[in-house]
Structure formats: C-alpha cells, structure tokens
Image (tube, rainbow, N blue to C red; front, side, top):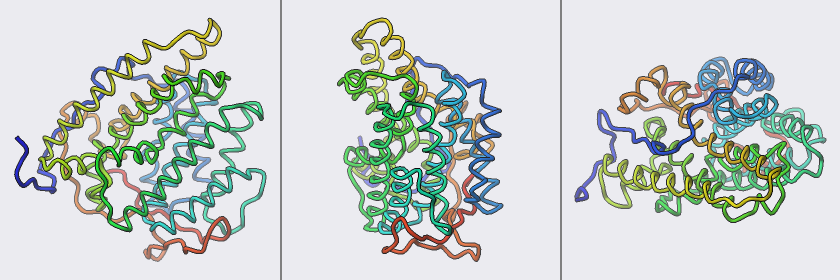
Length: 376
C-alpha cells in the first residue's frame, strides 16, 4: 500500500535499482580511451571554461571515459568526437543549470548560431560555448560528406535538446512540477541522449528509409528513456543537494503517486525493465535491408545499445555522482544523501551572473563554472 504521508527527505541510506539487468550488451571499453582522454581534455581546457577548482572537478568526471564506454565498438575518430561532444554537453548543462528562462535561451542562441554558421568567427568576448561548438562542429562535418544525412539528423536532435533545456529552465523559474510521463517527454531530450545517439550514425551512411523506419524511431526513444531514467536514479543525491527537487523522475513519482522513496525506486525499476524487454524484442524483430545495409545496421544497433550500457558503467567508474566510491556503490547498490551544495557556475568574485534577457548570439561576458561536482 502507498505510504499515507511520504517524506521527500532522503533517508540515511537507500537502494539503487539496476534497470539494465536484462540488457544483454556487456561493458566494453574502447582501446582508444587513454589517447582520446589526453586529446579531448586538452581541447576543452584550451577554451578555459572553468577556474582551477572547476577544472579539477571536471577532470574527475572523465567524459572521455563516457565516450570510450558508449562508442566502444567504433574507431578512434568517433571516440574522440564523442568525448568532445560529452564535454560540450556538460559545459552547456552547467552553464544553463543556473540560468532562468531568458538566460538559458540566450546561451542556446549562441550555441545554435555556432552550429548553423560554423565558418563564422565568434565574437571576441562571447561566452566560450560559441567557440567550443564551432570547433566541434567543424571537425564533425569534416569526417563525413557535406550532404551526409547524419549531419541534419544531429542538428535536429541538438535543436530538440537545447529547446528542452530552455523549457526546463522555465519550469525551474516557475517552480513547475510535471507528471512523470509529461516530464519524461522533456527529460529524454535534456539528458542529451538524441544527439549522443546521432553520432552512432556517423560514417555508416544509412539510407533514410532505415533511419526513419518505425522500429528505429522506437529504439532511439527507448534508449533515450532508459538513459534519462538511469541518470535520474543515480544523480538523485547530487540533485537534491543542489535543490533541484522536482526535475528528477524519482521525486516526481514519489509526489505524483504519494509513495515513499523505496516504493518510487521499485516503480521505476519495474517500468525500466519493461522498456528493456521491449528494446530487446524490437532489436530482434528488425527487418532485413540486404547484406551490406544489414552490416551497417548491426553496427548502428550495437552503438545505440552500448550507449545505454556505457552510461550506466560510466556513472560508477567516474567521480561525477559518487566520488571515489562508485565501484563500491555498484556492488552494494546502497547510496547515502549528500550535504547541501552550491551551484557550479560563478564569477571570479563568487557572484553568480545570469545572462541578460536581451542577449542572444552576440556579446556575453565570460562566466566561470567553479566547483563542478566530483563528489558533491
């Protein structure tokens, strides 16, 4: 029976469910990990997006490890591109997390302008997101033909991501709490899953009829949903410490169904397991398009599935959510809450700067994400 008056405070310890117990793809780490880590870390730090404390914490997150786990079956150029995309994602996420709707919209406009006009130099004192995006996109475009479908697919998915990040900022500003399924429509995008999955298509030259086949549309949606739920379950303690109470699936299920934290975790576990079973069944039921296309489809499907598995593995192996205790927590599945923490974006004088509402892709003063979380 549901609890009559559940507490929204986290208990001293709680259990982390394993949503991927029945996903047959195992952990797989790319042989290019170490080389890519050195290159990608140097690349993102060349834009100086963080102060010293922020740099140390950012390195502890090890987003190159995330790419090496999620794109593990692919060649080095994709692993490197994936690592740079992860760095762009999380920089954008940390910059927009402390913004209201207008500020997030201004940052989105800067990034969108860099994607749409990658040959245009960025304004001298513009926030670093424009230059990061421009450099990433120019290198991504260089590895495929100019008319490759994967480029337009990526841009469409990025647009969905950035517009929903702005919507999330508006929800924060208005203190709006959505129902679980309404929230999930947005969360599938704000997790960054769709642009991340879009890189799986690079270099495969999939026919449009394959990419837009209803089965593949569903597979991408299911993968995005699982990645979002995995992230929400594992990031709960960190987000609660930062005051992001109602932008997490676990908290929304607790409130919507008036149930306790253990009951909400069990509900999400059951839901996630149903999605995994359906994902597995859909992969098995994919039609054939002939030997050559089927070979490329197999690589693409493995990329989608490895993205799901890799996010789960990286969560425990990096220091972003669990600090140095990730592997221990993976074994015990037992988690404890974090003490309250400040946001991670600040000026050098410790004053948070919000991007002016009137600002778009022009001038934005540099802001510095400071103590980006390593262990909350």
